[in-house]
Amino acid sequence: MDKNSNTYIFIYAVLMVVIVAAMLSFVATKLKPFQDFNEEVQKKQDILKAIQVDSNAKTAVDLYNKYIVGSRVVNSDGDLLEGQNAFKVDLKKEISKPVEDRSLPIFVSANDDGSTKLIIPLQGKGLWGPIWGYISLNDDMKTIYGASFDHKSETPGLGAEINTEKFQEQFLGKKILDENQEFVSVKVVKGGAENNNPHAVDAISGGTITSDGLEDMMFDCLKPYMNYFERVLTKGGE
Amino acid sequence: MKEREPLFSRKNLRLLSEPINKNNPITVQVLGICSALAVTVQLKPSIVMALSVMFVMGFSNLIISLMRKTIPSRIRIIVQLVVIASLVIIVDQVLKAFLFDVSRQLSVFVGLIITNCIIMGRLEAFALANKPWPSLLDGLGNAAGYGAILVLVGFFRELLGSGTVFGYPIFAELGLFKIGYENNGLFILPPMALIIVGVIIWVQRSRNRELIEEN
Image (cartoon, rainbow over all chains, first blue to last red; front, side, top):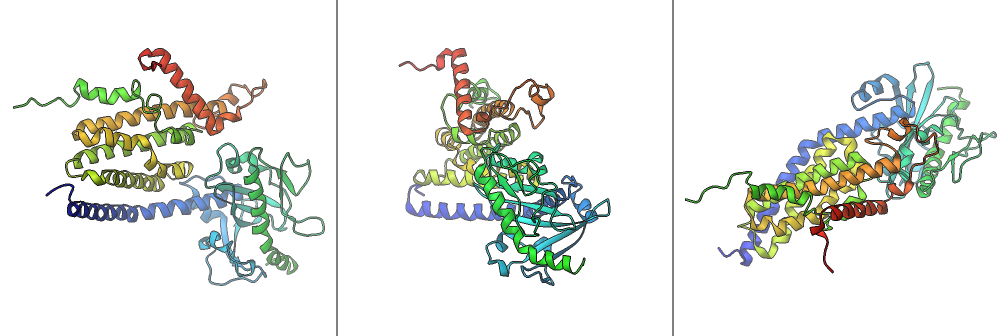
């Protein structure tokens, strides 16, 4: 058959596409469970990091089961939403909804010293793509106990620095409420925050847009929880 | 009967070794520069990228060479792209399944191997006209030449930009920061990769005068 005839080209193209499609979907289905597991382990590692527990891909699952003793999903009015799995809530979808309709996951940890921490997941936008993280709060529900941030594609050495120890450490002990118990979140200040300011940390030089994105993410993702926190505090515990 | 050529004849070995130095795709042919700029901030992603390109290039050359007698010349570019794209997707999926943290670091750049002009260049120039074995060697050789430059650039950018090698803080250990040394932030940005590649080209040409073009 003539290699340059239309029929030959047509059959050749169709066969090629079918074979390649079959092969790729086979590979993708076979590898999917491994990939899902990796994502889950990564998420557990991130959550653990927010309560200052170091883990690696091997220990994350055990440590998660040990430290994370509970989870719940609430809405912005502070009501508990029954029947939802906090771990499975897709934050990317939630933040695109209006605040009233969001499902807000909370994880509860019991640390070695007997204290209880609340872990709040965050999701926002950096310069090139999504950024996310977890903030853990002491049981006064305003002091930050730990923070972990990560990003998809921020500039290495600049915006990407948000996932370094050095940046995340700054958040420890910061307060998200001011003296009047009003929500102020934590500001990321370009040029450096003044010492002893409990509501601000230093931005990353050269990573202004990522820093701003992180500040917005903290504000937008923490604010909806305030009704729930207030309700818990006024009831005097849970 | 025609005598069979030994697998590692001198001609075949040249296919493997020439692109590493004398006919290097980056420094001599100046191809594949864009990914060399993007992934070389640190050493580890540079190495994984080099290995991924080696896999894609070796196999795409081999597969295209095996198919070369059946490919209709009017759609040969599309056929080449399909082969490259499938291999790249396989690499990406495997990295996500078994080398999760590295795949997160490389993020979109694995996918962008598809657009690496060296790969299509070798398919067009070599694999379409040669037997499978030499094609495989040619692919591996060119990928090695590309990878060698990537690793070299990655090494200098990580060392001078972040003061580390493979994440190990070598400059901090040496106490350089205490005596007032500071990391050069410029090395982290892509333009510095271009300058390092330029320096490599300079060094290579001053050692090997054949490469200097006559004006």
